[in-house]
Image (cartoon, helix red, strand yellow):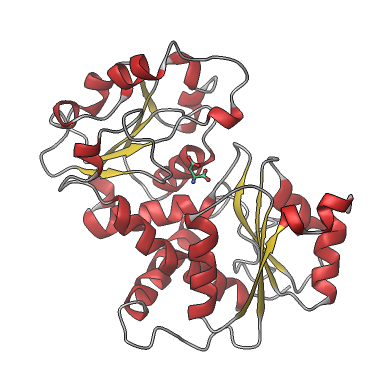
Length: 317
Ligand code: ASP
């Protein structure tokens, strides 16, 4: 079957999910991002790779980091960038998502960056746009957030270059997290030998072991000797009814505190995709501590998004 994310020469055409992408494409994105990481450190932070192209940010759901870093990344590639505030657009007048997209294609938009609360929204758009248009999924429901997964593995590779010798723990609301799904696919495809998920039963998807992860319900056991701890936010906006006794109880069992972190390897790094809820899933002493790489994750997000957009622009039909 055709891979909807690749063109007929096997190059990246759309980025919709990490699942289904071959290891060599993931590695190519990370290696390309490595070369762009240097651009952000220069005095003139621009390269002309997307000159004359238009990138359209289409965010149907809130975002701070993802929208801003996509915008900065597109500008550093010299693209023209349009960010649509959907609340003030024709969607509020009843226009369908596809009509909005087609109108923007009529204005010669080349790349769409799409966030939507509905899983599958970016796939749907990719299936219906003209062949020269590229779509990037910037988060769809609880399904996928591929550029977050990629920037997370990029960050891990920067701090822990030997990916074949790592233990990674992902902690928290795995059930509703598109980030966790993307991270798990990225880590296992890149050959990380041990990926653990740590969560109460109510916050784990059924059959999660089938994704190739080890399941822990006890955080102290799960953190033992890990090299990387990835914390997740409770996705209250995606929960139907109460799945937890209380925020205090959750913090007691699954909040990352200095004493729990001490069970991981002494050089373990702490990650979080943001937005962080201090005192719910993470203690400030850890979030702002020496092992935290939460802000470098944000910085690397720009290089990774530059890499993805430049690769898409170089693909065919
Ligand atoms: N920013 C990430 C996302 O959009 C994580 C989160 O919201 O908790 O999925």
